[in-house]
Length: 342
Image 1 (cartoon, rainbow, N blue to C red):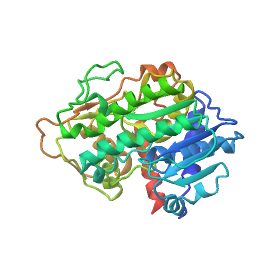
Image 2: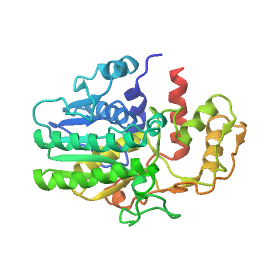
Image 3: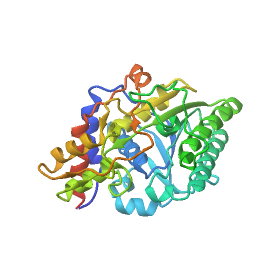
Image 4: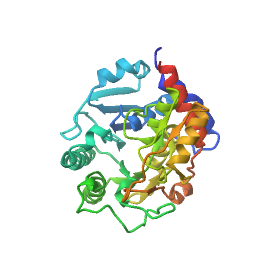
């Protein structure tokens, strides 16, 4: 079956549009790095939806392998507003002319990328450096960085505010990803002071939706995969850690709105405040996708990192943003998308 992510998510965007702030990109030129990753796919889908409703803009997207993406996602090849360029974001970016805005969403979060933690840190810093250099050279007025809740390190129970003073432990190699994101924010602040463009700092937590890798290291993706296979849903822990999830269509709306409406230089958490235990997440996924399947808990883990990983989203709410898609519906929609792929 031919995949059409933009067509599938159009139903979600229509539903969200009844509650969300309006998005206006008319006449703008936008650069997106990581355009074929999870964030990028959802951004391209919402941009396609906006174009179909009469908005006119130009988007240049960077990808390590555009041809492979377009072969798998032929809907994207039909978009007259989109040009995908082959790029290694750690090196000078292709693209000519002036751009109004830039979204730097290129981050390799696949499990295999975490095996070389030095490369995780080096690549993250290098990619941000090139994004900032591109912005300075191409007249970018607004630049959005996709940071991470990992920047906060281990979190206390309850939603974490952007002003939370703790950070990942720089003495631990496992902090490489979060530290790269923290360094990226400082680099952006310094570059903005020199070049005069505005930066939007987002700290992104956990997400679910079409385009999520069901075979990666994301618990919710693994649960959906196991449920689609008829179970059992297997946990690698006792499931007491607490997480929350924002649907990919909601995420795309958030990022485009924050790109143009968020105060420059101020961090904004991106995610859902509705936390639940991983065990409850597995049970809910089972109930939505494969009722009656078994859920198998693993052993308790001592010193498990980030047992609580839930953002406070008051700053986003003040800008009109919310988790418009309930998590059960988000799981249903993600499962349906993967069923249509088979």
